[in-house]
Amino acid sequence: MSDAAHTLERPAGAVPPAIELRGISKAFGPVQANKDIHIRVEKGTIHGIIGENGAGKSTLMSILYGFYKADSGEILINGQPTEIPDSQAAIRAGIGMVFQHFKLVQNFTVLENVILGAEAGWLLKPSVSRARGLLKQLATDFGLNVDPDALIEKLSVGHQQRVEILKALYREADILILDEPTGVLTPAEADHLFRILRGLKEQGKTIVLITHKLREIMEVTDNVSVMRRGEMVDTVRTSETSPPHLAELMVGRKVLLRVEKHPAKPGPVVLDVKGLRVVDDMGVERLRGIDLQVRAGEILGIAGVAGNGQSELLEALAGLTPGEGAATLSGQPLDVTGKSSDGYTRRMSGVSHVPEDRQRRGLIMNFHAWENVALGYHHDPAYNRGAFWMDNPAILRMTEDYMKAFDVRPPNPALTAESFSGGNQQKLVLAREIERGPELLLVGQPTRGVDIGAIEFIHQRLIELRDAGKAVLLVSVELDEILSLSDRIAVMFDGRIMGERLPEQTDEAELGLLMAGVTEKGAA
Image (cartoon, rainbow, N blue to C red; front, side, top):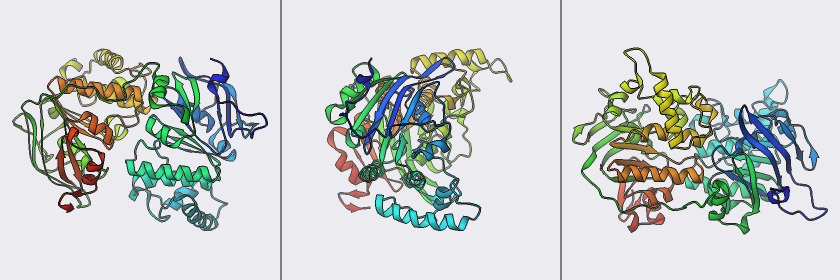
């Protein structure tokens, strides 16, 4: 494909682009992450970069930010050839980057994180004074309101992301790269982020937005570049394209943007929960007497704004968080107190768990893929050669099968979990838990940080599990996902279930009110 197919036409004499990458290539061993990439990003625009997980988006931006060095190619910033051997050179060139997984010191304050690495000499007092004044100005200019003296660990995810943006702006970045910025945000937080990005654009900043969410691309970008398997497929004006067209460019085939499923045929009750309560280490009651049932052959979706007890519900049922109350699995007692249960017994009884945070709860990042596939199932006789020996060849074969079934890229069981993109990490966890055909699947945020093609695939697998007569308890902050996948929807607010609805008899507006604690009887 010619360079012209990759870039937008520019009039003669136009202002040079903020970013121009020419012929960028990068390989990691046999894996070609980027191949002859050409892209231009115009000044003062929001430019989206989309593609499947493993398409090379993050690698390309990491080259621009100096984390990686390209094997070949040229970088131009504001029309000038620029060498970027490291992140300090990128910062000097006016580039800032907000990563999908934040780079913040949790027990430092906002102010300390902002000035960290950018101190003006040995004396901290001038840096602190300057930073405090600048943060106040940035809050006024861009709506980036954060308490400068707050500890990072006490802030919501959305506020932590604002701190990352503040760090970049404090270092006088004119170009801001955001890698999957809404992957950990609620819909309301994502909307606020977009308002911030529009404000930055109006102030002349250039934004590069890496995302897999087509709605976000259509809502906030001016232009969009599509990558597939390490190559640049096309660059188009957002106003001249559509979600189906972009999805087809990303995947190389037509993609269903809706879930196709037959009506559920619910069977006997698999999970029965009564009066489940959870109190955290700080003495805060996170679950306030939850009653729910999930039947064989159905998906019960739990909707709600993050932080209203959904995480504690999944973890209590998975045996990770102690609670009070009663639960049964197919009529047999299921311990929710944490006193007598262990993960292996629960898994062998037919309960699988896909945690909301794949990196902290689902994987050990420096373990190989094949070792992660065995996690939680390592006592299974299929993986053992006796009391003390693991059958590693059997685990490797199983991992290869899982990778093939879930299209994990690259399909190499010997790679560590941290070597995979976030979406491929998610597919590895899902494969481990779904392929065993559990009686009950507890799944949290199944498509967080996952591209459009993989979302379609994951949704299909969840529906197949349901149609095989299994019970699925689904937690997601994506309302469209809840509405399209669920057979019944329960809405949580402040540790309680506010109501239950059938998807065909409700909409986002009604669910949004319930998520805010508002019922027909008034506010909770």
